[in-house]
Length: 323
Ligand code: ACO
Image: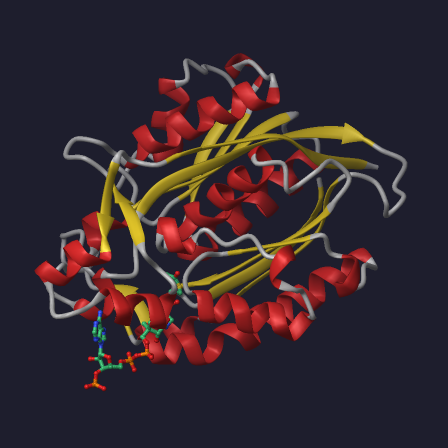
Protein backbone atom coordinates (compact mmCIF):
# COMPACT_ATOMS: atom_id res chain seq x y z
CA UNK A 1 0.00 0.00 0.00
CA UNK A 2 1.22 3.47 -0.88
CA UNK A 3 0.19 6.49 1.21
CA UNK A 4 0.76 10.22 0.72
CA UNK A 5 2.69 11.49 3.72
CA UNK A 6 2.94 15.20 4.66
CA UNK A 7 6.64 16.10 4.62
CA UNK A 8 6.38 19.81 5.40
CA UNK A 9 4.27 22.94 5.30
CA UNK A 10 4.74 26.61 4.40
CA UNK A 11 2.71 29.76 4.11
CA UNK A 12 2.83 33.38 3.07
CA UNK A 13 0.79 36.42 4.02
CA UNK A 14 1.07 39.81 2.28
CA UNK A 15 2.64 42.48 4.52
CA UNK A 16 -0.35 44.85 4.53
CA UNK A 17 -2.77 44.24 7.42
CA UNK A 18 -6.28 45.70 7.13
CA UNK A 19 -8.05 46.08 10.48
CA UNK A 20 -11.77 46.19 11.24
CA UNK A 21 -11.40 49.81 12.35
CA UNK A 22 -9.96 50.74 8.95
CA UNK A 23 -12.89 48.94 7.28
CA UNK A 24 -15.37 50.94 9.32
CA UNK A 25 -14.02 54.03 7.64
CA UNK A 26 -14.70 52.48 4.21
CA UNK A 27 -18.21 51.02 4.75
CA UNK A 28 -20.95 51.31 7.40
CA UNK A 29 -19.70 48.65 9.82
CA UNK A 30 -17.89 48.29 13.13
CA UNK A 31 -15.19 46.19 14.79
CA UNK A 32 -17.84 44.96 17.21
CA UNK A 33 -20.21 43.75 14.45
CA UNK A 34 -17.48 41.97 12.50
CA UNK A 35 -15.96 40.25 15.57
CA UNK A 36 -19.32 39.20 16.95
CA UNK A 37 -20.66 37.80 13.65
CA UNK A 38 -17.46 36.28 12.22
CA UNK A 39 -14.61 36.31 14.77
CA UNK A 40 -12.45 38.25 12.28
CA UNK A 41 -10.24 41.04 13.66
CA UNK A 42 -7.89 41.67 10.75
CA UNK A 43 -6.84 40.28 7.35
CA UNK A 44 -3.89 40.65 4.96
CA UNK A 45 -4.23 42.33 1.56
CA UNK A 46 -1.89 41.77 -1.40
CA UNK A 47 0.03 44.81 -2.69
CA UNK A 48 -0.50 46.22 -6.18
CA UNK A 49 1.46 43.98 -8.53
CA UNK A 50 1.54 41.11 -6.03
CA UNK A 51 -0.26 38.20 -7.68
CA UNK A 52 -1.72 34.88 -6.55
CA UNK A 53 1.29 33.13 -8.14
CA UNK A 54 3.68 35.27 -6.04
CA UNK A 55 1.88 34.34 -2.81
CA UNK A 56 1.79 30.68 -3.90
CA UNK A 57 5.49 30.57 -4.80
CA UNK A 58 6.50 32.07 -1.44
CA UNK A 59 4.37 29.51 0.43
CA UNK A 60 5.73 26.68 -1.74
CA UNK A 61 9.36 27.72 -1.09
CA UNK A 62 8.70 27.74 2.66
CA UNK A 63 7.09 24.29 2.46
CA UNK A 64 9.98 22.84 0.46
CA UNK A 65 12.48 24.18 2.98
CA UNK A 66 10.42 22.85 5.89
CA UNK A 67 10.26 19.43 4.19
CA UNK A 68 13.94 19.38 3.26
CA UNK A 69 12.94 18.73 -0.35
CA UNK A 70 14.56 20.38 -3.40
CA UNK A 71 12.25 22.04 -5.94
CA UNK A 72 13.65 19.73 -8.62
CA UNK A 73 12.31 16.66 -6.77
CA UNK A 74 8.70 17.87 -7.18
CA UNK A 75 6.90 16.14 -10.06
CA UNK A 76 3.35 17.35 -9.35
CA UNK A 77 1.93 20.76 -8.43
CA UNK A 78 -1.77 21.06 -7.64
CA UNK A 79 -2.80 24.64 -6.91
CA UNK A 80 -6.25 25.40 -5.55
CA UNK A 81 -7.48 28.90 -6.34
CA UNK A 82 -10.57 30.82 -7.40
CA UNK A 83 -8.47 33.92 -8.09
CA UNK A 84 -5.90 32.82 -10.71
CA UNK A 85 -3.43 35.33 -12.18
CA UNK A 86 -4.98 34.87 -15.62
CA UNK A 87 -7.90 32.95 -17.14
CA UNK A 88 -5.09 30.76 -18.50
CA UNK A 89 -2.45 29.42 -18.16
CA UNK A 90 -3.06 27.77 -14.82
CA UNK A 91 -1.40 29.64 -11.95
CA UNK A 92 0.22 26.31 -10.96
CA UNK A 93 2.28 26.41 -14.16
CA UNK A 94 3.49 29.95 -13.37
CA UNK A 95 4.49 28.74 -9.89
CA UNK A 96 6.28 25.77 -11.48
CA UNK A 97 8.29 28.21 -13.60
CA UNK A 98 9.01 30.51 -10.63
CA UNK A 99 10.35 27.52 -8.69
CA UNK A 100 12.58 26.57 -11.64
CA UNK A 101 10.83 23.20 -12.11
CA UNK A 102 10.84 21.86 -15.67
CA UNK A 103 9.51 18.33 -15.18
CA UNK A 104 6.28 16.76 -14.02
CA UNK A 105 2.77 18.23 -14.21
CA UNK A 106 1.15 21.33 -12.76
CA UNK A 107 -2.51 22.35 -12.84
CA UNK A 108 -5.12 24.35 -10.94
CA UNK A 109 -8.11 23.01 -9.06
CA UNK A 110 -11.20 25.21 -8.72
CA UNK A 111 -13.52 24.41 -5.83
CA UNK A 112 -13.43 27.86 -4.19
CA UNK A 113 -13.09 27.52 -0.40
CA UNK A 114 -13.08 23.71 -0.61
CA UNK A 115 -10.19 23.91 -3.09
CA UNK A 116 -7.45 22.77 -0.73
CA UNK A 117 -9.33 19.63 0.33
CA UNK A 118 -10.10 18.91 -3.35
CA UNK A 119 -6.44 19.53 -4.30
CA UNK A 120 -5.11 17.37 -1.48
CA UNK A 121 -7.43 14.51 -2.40
CA UNK A 122 -6.54 14.81 -6.12
CA UNK A 123 -2.79 14.83 -5.43
CA UNK A 124 -3.19 11.91 -3.01
CA UNK A 125 -5.00 9.85 -5.65
CA UNK A 126 -2.29 10.59 -8.23
CA UNK A 127 0.53 9.73 -5.82
CA UNK A 128 -1.12 6.46 -4.79
CA UNK A 129 -1.69 5.59 -8.47
CA UNK A 130 2.01 6.08 -9.18
CA UNK A 131 1.63 9.15 -11.43
CA UNK A 132 4.06 11.16 -9.28
CA UNK A 133 6.26 10.75 -6.20
CA UNK A 134 6.50 14.18 -4.59
CA UNK A 135 3.78 16.79 -4.83
CA UNK A 136 3.22 20.36 -3.81
CA UNK A 137 -0.40 21.08 -2.90
CA UNK A 138 -0.98 24.80 -2.65
CA UNK A 139 -3.96 26.97 -1.75
CA UNK A 140 -3.47 30.59 -2.82
CA UNK A 141 -5.92 33.46 -3.17
CA UNK A 142 -6.18 37.20 -3.74
CA UNK A 143 -9.89 37.57 -2.89
CA UNK A 144 -9.33 41.31 -2.34
CA UNK A 145 -9.38 41.57 -6.16
CA UNK A 146 -12.92 40.14 -6.53
CA UNK A 147 -14.57 41.83 -3.56
CA UNK A 148 -17.14 44.58 -3.96
CA UNK A 149 -15.57 47.05 -1.53
CA UNK A 150 -18.91 48.89 -1.22
CA UNK A 151 -20.77 45.74 -0.01
CA UNK A 152 -20.34 45.62 3.77
CA UNK A 153 -21.94 42.17 3.96
CA UNK A 154 -19.02 40.55 2.09
CA UNK A 155 -15.96 42.84 1.98
CA UNK A 156 -15.32 42.52 5.73
CA UNK A 157 -15.06 38.72 5.61
CA UNK A 158 -12.19 37.88 3.25
CA UNK A 159 -8.41 38.20 3.04
CA UNK A 160 -5.41 37.25 0.87
CA UNK A 161 -2.77 34.59 1.52
CA UNK A 162 -1.27 31.24 0.56
CA UNK A 163 -0.34 27.95 2.19
CA UNK A 164 1.32 24.79 0.88
CA UNK A 165 2.17 21.24 1.86
CA UNK A 166 4.71 18.81 0.41
CA UNK A 167 3.34 15.26 -0.02
CA UNK A 168 5.47 12.21 -0.69
CA UNK A 169 4.31 8.77 -1.83
CA UNK A 170 5.57 6.24 0.68
CA UNK A 171 5.06 2.47 0.60
CA UNK A 172 3.42 1.27 3.81
CA UNK A 173 1.99 -1.86 5.39
CA UNK A 174 -1.63 -0.77 5.07
CA UNK A 175 -2.34 -0.77 8.79
CA UNK A 176 -4.86 1.97 9.53
CA UNK A 177 -2.45 3.39 12.12
CA UNK A 178 0.01 4.30 9.37
CA UNK A 179 0.89 7.86 8.45
CA UNK A 180 -0.44 9.90 5.55
CA UNK A 181 -3.81 10.82 4.08
CA UNK A 182 -6.14 8.15 5.44
CA UNK A 183 -9.41 9.18 3.81
CA UNK A 184 -11.18 11.99 1.98
CA UNK A 185 -14.76 12.74 1.00
CA UNK A 186 -15.60 15.34 -1.67
CA UNK A 187 -19.09 16.61 -2.52
CA UNK A 188 -20.73 19.29 -4.65
CA UNK A 189 -24.26 20.43 -5.46
CA UNK A 190 -24.80 23.01 -8.21
CA UNK A 191 -28.37 23.75 -7.17
CA UNK A 192 -26.87 26.21 -4.66
CA UNK A 193 -25.04 28.36 -7.24
CA UNK A 194 -26.93 31.56 -6.36
CA UNK A 195 -25.93 31.43 -2.68
CA UNK A 196 -22.24 32.15 -3.31
CA UNK A 197 -20.74 33.03 -6.69
CA UNK A 198 -18.81 35.62 -8.68
CA UNK A 199 -20.95 37.65 -11.10
CA UNK A 200 -18.38 37.63 -13.91
CA UNK A 201 -16.16 35.32 -15.93
CA UNK A 202 -14.60 34.84 -19.38
CA UNK A 203 -17.62 33.08 -20.90
CA UNK A 204 -20.36 35.28 -19.43
CA UNK A 205 -19.40 38.92 -18.93
CA UNK A 206 -15.79 38.91 -20.07
CA UNK A 207 -14.85 40.55 -16.76
CA UNK A 208 -13.48 39.11 -13.51
CA UNK A 209 -16.66 40.10 -11.62
CA UNK A 210 -17.36 40.43 -7.92
CA UNK A 211 -18.18 37.98 -5.15
CA UNK A 212 -21.88 37.77 -4.27
CA UNK A 213 -23.12 35.88 -1.24
CA UNK A 214 -26.33 35.18 0.61
CA UNK A 215 -24.48 34.90 3.91
CA UNK A 216 -27.37 33.66 6.01
CA UNK A 217 -28.20 30.94 3.44
CA UNK A 218 -24.59 29.74 3.31
CA UNK A 219 -24.47 29.72 7.09
CA UNK A 220 -27.68 27.70 7.30
CA UNK A 221 -26.21 24.84 5.23
CA UNK A 222 -22.63 24.92 6.48
CA UNK A 223 -22.59 22.83 9.65
CA UNK A 224 -24.85 20.06 8.35
CA UNK A 225 -22.97 19.60 5.08
CA UNK A 226 -19.47 19.55 6.54
CA UNK A 227 -20.56 17.27 9.38
CA UNK A 228 -21.72 14.75 6.80
CA UNK A 229 -18.33 14.54 5.05
CA UNK A 230 -16.44 14.51 8.37
CA UNK A 231 -18.56 11.50 9.39
CA UNK A 232 -17.72 9.89 6.06
CA UNK A 233 -13.99 10.50 6.39
CA UNK A 234 -14.01 9.07 9.93
CA UNK A 235 -15.97 6.01 8.79
CA UNK A 236 -13.70 5.32 5.77
CA UNK A 237 -10.62 5.40 8.02
CA UNK A 238 -12.24 3.44 10.88
CA UNK A 239 -11.48 6.27 13.29
CA UNK A 240 -13.70 7.61 16.10
CA UNK A 241 -14.28 11.37 16.50
CA UNK A 242 -12.84 11.12 20.01
CA UNK A 243 -9.49 9.95 18.55
CA UNK A 244 -8.96 13.18 16.56
CA UNK A 245 -6.03 15.24 17.90
CA UNK A 246 -6.58 18.39 15.82
CA UNK A 247 -9.52 19.86 13.96
CA UNK A 248 -8.26 22.24 11.24
CA UNK A 249 -11.36 23.59 9.49
CA UNK A 250 -11.68 26.09 6.67
CA UNK A 251 -11.53 29.47 8.34
CA UNK A 252 -14.67 31.28 7.18
CA UNK A 253 -16.43 32.11 10.36
CA UNK A 254 -15.78 31.38 14.05
CA UNK A 255 -19.43 30.56 14.69
CA UNK A 256 -19.46 27.83 12.00
CA UNK A 257 -16.18 26.41 13.36
CA UNK A 258 -17.47 26.37 16.95
CA UNK A 259 -20.78 24.77 16.02
CA UNK A 260 -19.07 22.02 13.99
CA UNK A 261 -16.50 21.27 16.72
CA UNK A 262 -19.26 21.12 19.32
CA UNK A 263 -21.17 18.60 17.21
CA UNK A 264 -18.21 16.20 17.24
CA UNK A 265 -17.31 16.86 20.88
CA UNK A 266 -13.97 18.49 20.06
CA UNK A 267 -12.98 20.96 22.79
CA UNK A 268 -11.57 24.39 21.93
CA UNK A 269 -8.02 23.18 22.73
CA UNK A 270 -8.19 20.77 19.77
CA UNK A 271 -9.38 23.35 17.22
CA UNK A 272 -6.92 25.43 15.19
CA UNK A 273 -8.35 28.92 14.64
CA UNK A 274 -6.69 31.60 12.49
CA UNK A 275 -9.79 33.36 11.14
CA UNK A 276 -9.27 36.19 13.67
CA UNK A 277 -5.97 37.15 12.03
CA UNK A 278 -6.39 35.93 8.42
CA UNK A 279 -10.09 36.42 7.66
CA UNK A 280 -11.49 33.98 5.10
CA UNK A 281 -8.67 33.26 2.64
CA UNK A 282 -10.74 30.66 0.73
CA UNK A 283 -8.55 27.79 -0.56
CA UNK A 284 -5.55 29.13 1.37
CA UNK A 285 -7.13 29.00 4.81
CA UNK A 286 -6.51 25.33 5.69
CA UNK A 287 -2.83 25.15 4.62
CA UNK A 288 -2.24 28.51 6.35
CA UNK A 289 -3.75 27.15 9.57
CA UNK A 290 -1.82 23.86 9.22
CA UNK A 291 1.43 25.78 8.84
CA UNK A 292 0.74 27.88 11.95
CA UNK A 293 -0.09 24.81 14.08
CA UNK A 294 2.79 22.70 12.71
CA UNK A 295 5.41 25.41 13.26
CA UNK A 296 4.23 26.38 16.76
CA UNK A 297 4.47 22.72 17.80
CA UNK A 298 0.79 21.98 18.32
CA UNK A 299 0.57 19.35 15.56
CA UNK A 300 3.10 16.53 16.12
CA UNK A 301 4.09 13.53 13.99
CA UNK A 302 1.71 10.62 14.40
CA UNK A 303 -1.29 12.75 15.35
CA UNK A 304 -4.69 12.59 13.65
CA UNK A 305 -5.74 15.81 11.91
CA UNK A 306 -9.24 16.38 10.47
CA UNK A 307 -9.53 18.96 7.66
CA UNK A 308 -12.88 20.26 6.41
CA UNK A 309 -14.20 22.98 4.12
CA UNK A 310 -17.26 24.29 2.32
CA UNK A 311 -17.46 26.91 -0.42
CA UNK A 312 -19.10 28.22 -3.57
CA UNK A 313 -20.81 25.70 -5.81
CA UNK A 314 -21.69 24.58 -3.30
CA UNK A 315 -18.67 22.36 -2.82
CA UNK A 316 -17.58 20.70 0.40
CA UNK A 317 -15.19 18.06 1.63
CA UNK A 318 -13.18 16.58 4.46
CA UNK A 319 -9.84 14.78 4.69
CA UNK A 320 -8.30 12.82 7.54
CA UNK A 321 -4.51 12.86 7.83
CA UNK A 322 -2.20 11.03 10.20
CA UNK A 323 0.65 13.55 10.37
N1 ACO B 1 -21.52 45.59 9.38
C1 ACO B 1 -22.68 45.93 9.98
N2 ACO B 1 -23.86 45.41 9.61
C2 ACO B 1 -23.86 44.51 8.61
C3 ACO B 1 -22.69 44.12 7.95
C4 ACO B 1 -21.49 44.70 8.36
N3 ACO B 1 -20.30 44.39 7.81
N4 ACO B 1 -23.01 43.22 7.01
C5 ACO B 1 -24.33 43.05 7.07
N5 ACO B 1 -24.87 43.84 8.04
C6 ACO B 1 -26.25 43.95 8.45
C7 ACO B 1 -27.21 43.51 7.40
O1 ACO B 1 -27.46 44.57 6.50
C8 ACO B 1 -28.43 43.14 8.21
O2 ACO B 1 -29.11 44.32 8.53
P1 ACO B 1 -30.74 44.32 8.55
O3 ACO B 1 -31.10 43.33 9.61
O4 ACO B 1 -31.03 45.73 8.87
O5 ACO B 1 -31.14 43.89 7.19
C9 ACO B 1 -27.84 42.61 9.50
O6 ACO B 1 -26.47 43.07 9.54
C10 ACO B 1 -27.86 41.10 9.60
O7 ACO B 1 -27.37 40.56 8.37
P2 ACO B 1 -27.22 39.01 8.15
O8 ACO B 1 -26.58 38.77 6.85
O9 ACO B 1 -28.52 38.36 8.43
O10 ACO B 1 -26.21 38.68 9.34
P3 ACO B 1 -25.75 37.29 9.87
O11 ACO B 1 -25.95 37.18 11.30
O12 ACO B 1 -26.24 36.18 9.01
O13 ACO B 1 -24.17 37.39 9.66
C11 ACO B 1 -22.54 36.64 8.08
C12 ACO B 1 -23.65 37.61 8.38
C13 ACO B 1 -21.38 36.91 9.02
C14 ACO B 1 -22.11 36.82 6.64
C15 ACO B 1 -23.06 35.20 8.32
O14 ACO B 1 -24.27 35.02 7.64
C16 ACO B 1 -22.10 34.18 7.85
O15 ACO B 1 -21.03 34.01 8.42
N6 ACO B 1 -22.46 33.41 6.80
C17 ACO B 1 -21.60 32.41 6.26
C18 ACO B 1 -20.76 33.09 5.30
C19 ACO B 1 -19.56 32.29 5.03
O16 ACO B 1 -18.98 31.67 5.90
N7 ACO B 1 -19.20 32.31 3.79
C20 ACO B 1 -18.06 31.70 3.38
C21 ACO B 1 -18.24 30.22 3.26
S1 ACO B 1 -17.74 29.69 1.76
C22 ACO B 1 -16.42 30.50 1.48
O17 ACO B 1 -15.58 30.53 2.33
C23 ACO B 1 -16.31 31.24 0.18
